[in-house]
Image (cartoon, rainbow, N blue to C red; front, side):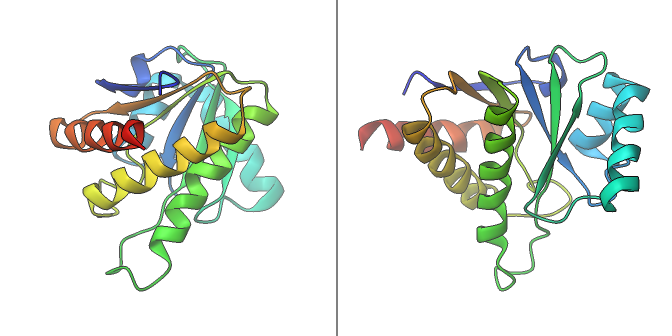
Length: 176
């Protein structure tokens, strides 16, 4: 599927209409990709997040909100809150699937043709990377089948092992 691209690198350097942020429920920045997006994107992102928090009190796990991208090479940042892994007994798979679906839905609603995703929940939230890769590629593949307006989804993998897992899942998807 040429509409899915897999890149090894830093998501803050990827040019796309929307960059997805693996945020926390407070939306006020944190570690990992969240911290990098806030740091490099600048104060405009934090200000937009504060307005969302004032209006609705943050962002629940599995949901997504959209803000400006500040100084990032994108129009928007879509913040989604992935699940913390608790052994798979607290709907983690369903919640991670919701992250991808809700982020893609927001992207389409805001006329985004390209969107880049990091590995949601694969860092300090400890979601198993192999399972995360399966869910990410399956969910995105199914979404793209049903939504021709989305031209390209880019999986941006910071770590080599996750990059290889995503590539494997994309190959499997292409064989179906």
